[in-house]
Image 1 (cartoon, rainbow, N blue to C red):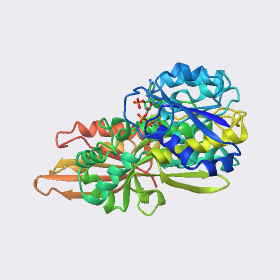
Image 2 (image 1 turned 180 degrees about the horizontal axis):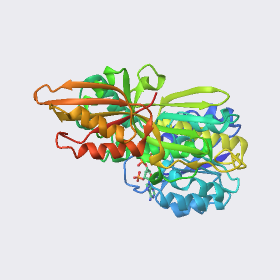
Image 3 (image 1 turned 180 degrees about the vertical axis):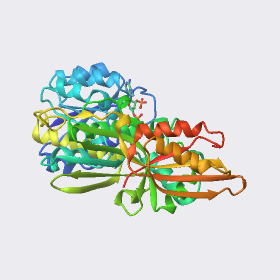
Amino acid sequence: MIKVAILGVGTVGSAVAEILKRNQAVIQARSGKKIVPVVGVVKDLNKKRDVDIELTDDIESVLNRDDIDIYVELLGGVEGPHQILKRILKKGKPVVTANKALLAYHRYDLQAVSNGVAIGFEASVAGGIPIIKALREGLSANHIKSIQGIMNGTSNYILTKMMHEKVSFEQVLKEAQELGYAEADPTFDVGGYDAAHKLLILASIAYGVHGDPEDILIEGIEHISQEDIYFAKEFEYTIKLLAIAKRRGSQVELRVHPAMVPSSKMIAKVDGVMNGISVVGDAVGETMYYGPGAGGEATASSVIADIIDIAREGKSSPMLGFKNPLEESALTLMPQEEIKTKYYIRMPVKDQKGVLATIASILGSCDISIDSFLQKPGVDDKDRVTLLFATHTCKESDVKRALEKINDLEFVLSRPNMIRIEE
Ligand SMILES: NC(=O)c1ccc[n+]([C@@H]2O[C@H](COP(=O)([O-])OP(=O)(O)OC[C@H]3O[C@@H](n4cnc5c(N)ncnc54)[C@H](OP(=O)(O)O)[C@@H]3O)[C@@H](O)[C@H]2O)c1
């Protein structure tokens, strides 16, 4: 019998306990062992909950038990669970976690302390989608060229609604909060931070690259307007919050931001709260993964898959999937300002002579070449027009420099908006 302790019996933890019981026979058939959740840790024992597992609020007593075979960490937080996981690993006990925030900062440290003891973390990226298994195992023969994913269901729900229903960001966010799809403080999701945590985890498996969330380009969807959506549709693009990793020589570029994606691409069709991830390998070509990125049962499905793996195989292969450095000289993070892509730039301006020439000259002086241009007359205000530029590939730092200069012009009516284009 494999005894499991569940640290944190909330949304995911209670689903883990429930599925371990409900699917006990099939889980036993697959693992060859009877897997039993013997204790769960919570903060507030008085909270009403519908779980069939012994509960305690004394985490120390559970950490000190010798009869637990696998610990499952579903507490949330960063530094607290980091210390807890280190303690468990040092005792030689395997752990399973869904905690992306913790892994975004401490994945290499945990791998180092683990000394070969299994750490399962499938549920930390894209909930129910087995993307970590795909990268660590299924695609292990490949050099990974790129990863491009929709990894935050809340943002995708909001953008999907905005694309289909002509409603503002604020309106959909409010509705998403009422439906329970968005947190009361949505910054973590709509600001791109949650997706960035997941991207860092995937990039460390694919490239062995180091870095904290603070080191990478992160931009949220808060500034996307119906005007952007209108122009996106005009050019047959869909706006998605993408988490992108790309190999560029000896560097890896990592970024999270809203992007215009051709509407014909598979990833553009990943709608609502669903997640979708495309991984391109040099041998396999493009592969695509789709499914629920969150939710108690979907996430528990991945947590239990890790438990089964550990029960079946004991000590697992290295946490991040490589025993030696992946490259002769380690790949490094590309500085944000060096990132190159295409851009869509929108700006409302006064309808007067010389505006276009001045803006074109600023863009040219910043090494930005224009691919296409569109002008939309103001609806209520006849003296206002919206200018739209799509650029050829250019440098992030050049675009930011140009936008600062344009923003200072007296005929520019509000801050120009920029969205990157991902073909
Ligand atoms: N929810 C999802 O869809 C999802 C998806 C992927 C990954 N994850 C990750 O999974 C983890 C758990 O998420 P969740 O949504 O299940 O969170 P949750 O519903 O807030 O549950 C957290 C649980 O941990 C307990 N807890 C928190 N701090 C504690 C402490 N200091 N001592 C003892 N117990 C403590 C809470 O106790 P009380 O019940 O008494 O408050 C609760 O049972 C997080 O790392 C999250 O990022 C979640």
